[in-house]
Every structure is written in C-alpha cells, then in structure tokens.
Amino acid sequence: MHPPLGIYGGTFDPVHYGHIKLAGIFRDTFKLQEVRLIPTGVPPHRPPPPVSPQQRADWVAEAIAAQPGLVLDEREVRRSGYCYTIDTLRELQREHPQTLLVWLIGGDSLAGLPGWRDWQQLLELGHLVVAARPGFDFATLPPPVSDQLQKRLAIASPEALSHGKISVLPAPLLSVSSTALRQRLARGEDVSDLTPVAASIVSSGLYRQSSDPV
Ligand code: ATP
Image 1 (cartoon, protein in one colour):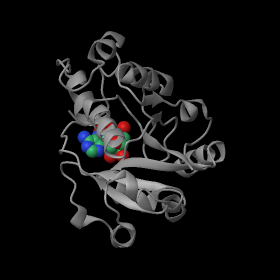
Image 2 (cartoon, rainbow, N blue to C red; image 1 turned 180 degrees about the vertical axis):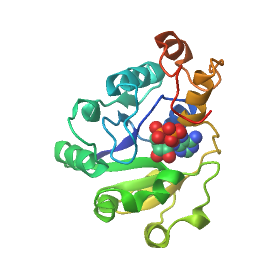
Image 3 (cartoon, helix red, strand yellow; image 1 turned 90 degrees about the horizontal axis):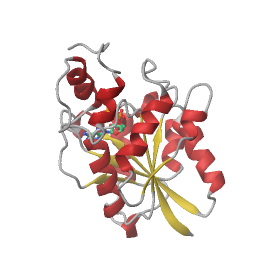
C-alpha cells in the first residue's frame, strides 16, 4: 500500500481559518503526507453559491500556499453538473488504487450524511474522519448515522487507519464558519481574524451584498 491520502471537500464559500486549521490538524494527527482540499463545483445539497467555483478555488490556493502538505485539487470545479462525493472518491480510488483515502468532514455534515448519494457505500470507500463543531452534538445524530458511527468507530491514529472505519478528530472547537464570514463581509466589517485571504476577498467586492440573513 502507498501512504494514505487525505481528502477534504467543502464549499469553501469562502475559505476560513477553521478550514485551514482543521486540515493541518487532520494532516498531523494521521501523519498524512498530502491533504487535498477539493472545492465543490455545483453542490447538490444547497443552492449554488453566487461566487464562482473557480474564484472559491483560487482563494483556497492562496490560503494554503504556505501550508506544507495541503494541496488544492480542482477536479470538482472543472466538473459540469452536480458534484457528488461518491463520484469524487471513486475517481480518486481509480487514480490511486493502492492508496487508502482518508476523508474529513465536520460533525454537521455527518448529521446530514443520509441525504448524500450512496452514503452507506461512501463509508466503505475509505476511512472517514469527523471534526466536532460548535453547535453540533454527537448525541443528536440521526439513528442510522449513530449506528454506523458505533459500528465503525476507530481511534484517531495513523495505525488505526482502515477501510470502512470512522474516527473523531481530536481538535479544539473552532467557532468560525463561512456563513459568519459572509455576514461580516456583507456588513463591510474587517474579517482578517476569520480568514487568511481577507484582503483578496475584500478587494474582489464579492459578498458585499449577501443573500444570508444578517
Ligand atoms: P457554511 O457556513 O456556508 O455552511 P462552512 O463554514 O460549514 O460553510 P464548508 O466549506 O461548507 O464551510 O465546510 C466544509 C467542511 O468543513 C464541512 O464538512 C464542514 O462541516 C467542515 N467545517 C467547516 N468549518 C468547520 C469548523 N469550524 N469546525 C468543524 N468543521 C468545520
């Protein structure tokens, strides 16, 4: 087997310090040589972000430029049509047949997993890592997901990485979200404490008129 490959998909609308810190803790906890950040193109679970996929990806590239082992993967940005995680993981598996895929999501995403395409098969495709998040409580997971979590739970260490397992990332709770970032941008407030690419986002003028409730 080749070294495991870290995968971290998201809307990154826009990228914030929570994403970058989590990706770094993910890399270090599992001794991953590479973590691919994969901005989604057209997400099936939410209305399409008004900011283009390429723009979101460009900010991710800028945000991780000085972070060793964090790499931008633009495959979903280039894909036409909806982006499903199962397609992306299968594609990566075909490209790296000898490699274990280790993929990271936040607890809020874990709770919504039954809405994802082929979610049970998704759990077989690699080792899932879940990050706790403020406002999310593992005790409130829908029963089909908590059953899977109990059945598949593994400690968070490089030695425990295995197909079909789930680990909880030992990381501090990070209260930042893209929603909060967009709301502050819409109000014209300083966001340099929330994202490493504040200057680029502000100078783009995007998010000045937000569709989020402010
Ligand atoms: P939004 O506020 O628009 O929903 P977001 O901050 O959740 O955005 P995404 O790009 O949707 O950002 O997040 C990508 C993945 O990272 C998701 O699985 C999400 O749960 C997780 N994530 C994002 N921010 C955090 C955080 N602060 N703590 C834990 N997980 C996070």
